[in-house]
Structures are given as structure tokens and as C-alpha cells.
Image (cartoon, rainbow, N blue to C red; front, side):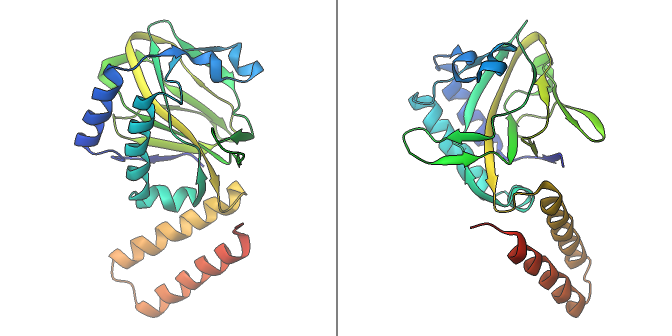
Length: 226
């Protein structure tokens, strides 16, 4: 399931993050890549210990907490602290798959990466190329969103960032351990929750909504891992 979520960041939040990144000290992105990924990765990244990365990451986390569509689609249990990358002209990240487990810096906790997320910080007109290409059973999805928009997709997907040919592509990326491990079950719950919201907005009768809501929560109760 590939989910596009508009306006995760407000204009003010986006501007605040961009201002912070202007004074950032970018390093070679391969420093945080696994052995296979490092062979096809060429970009810049902020060190996780950088105060700029921590400040901007806190803004992103607060924005995610209030984004109902993100919560509905991801059913997050744990989030890996947001990371920031930059692709300049000639940079790209070839086909790869994200590591199944990630250790949260400064802790002994390991997170299972059920979902990957990219939050775009650059508007499409600011750069050429740089599409995020995600492969699933229906083919490849080329994603290039407006600044402040997010795409959420299974971390098990093979994906890549196409070469940037002009300008610079700034983005946030992170991983989610979901309450529901199975992507098919999570997709079913998301569809059901979306339908309930739509029927509620249309004034559907209360008894039907109660029954559908009961189905949602009973399935979540069956599948959730705490």
C-alpha cells in the first residue's frame, strides 16, 4: 500500500525547517547505509547527532502526531527519529531495500521497519529528476510530491531515488514499526477506517456506523501487537 498524505507540514513549519537546513553541515550519506545500499547511494545527509537535525526532527514528529491520515494508515507503535537528506545534481540512490531492523541511536531498542516514509521539503519546481520510485505487485510508482507532503509505503518494497539533474532535493525520511505487522491486514484496516469516516461525513445512519466501527476495532484487537 502506497499512501500519499498532503500538507503534513504547515507553511510555517516548512519554512522553519528549511531555515534550519540552510545552516546545516551535510555529510556523505553513505555513512549511514548498509553494505549493499552504500554501493548505489550518492547523496548528502545530516548526522543524527547534529542539533539542527534534532530540532527539525522534533517539528516533524509533532506534525505527524496531529496528522490523522498518517495515524490511520501507519497505526504507528514506534517511529525512528527523522533523518534529513539532500540530493544535488548528479546524485541518486539506486535500487535497494531498507534494513528490517534499526537500532534507535542512544538506546538499546531495536525497531522493526514495517513502513518507510519520505516527507518532501523541496517543491517539484526546485529540482528536476529525483523521483522516488517504489516497486510493488502493481508495478513501479514514481512519486514527486509538493513540499510538506508525505508518502508512506511498505519498507519491504524495492525502491530508488532517480538522479537529480537540476537543483537540490531536500527531504525527511524515517521508518515506522506498526501496531499491525502484516501489510495486507493494515491495508484492510485503513480502507475500513476511511470508509467509516466517509460515511460519517455523509450522515449515514448511526447503527450501521456503530457496527462498522465495531468490526474495525475487533479486527484491530485481533491483529495489534503491543
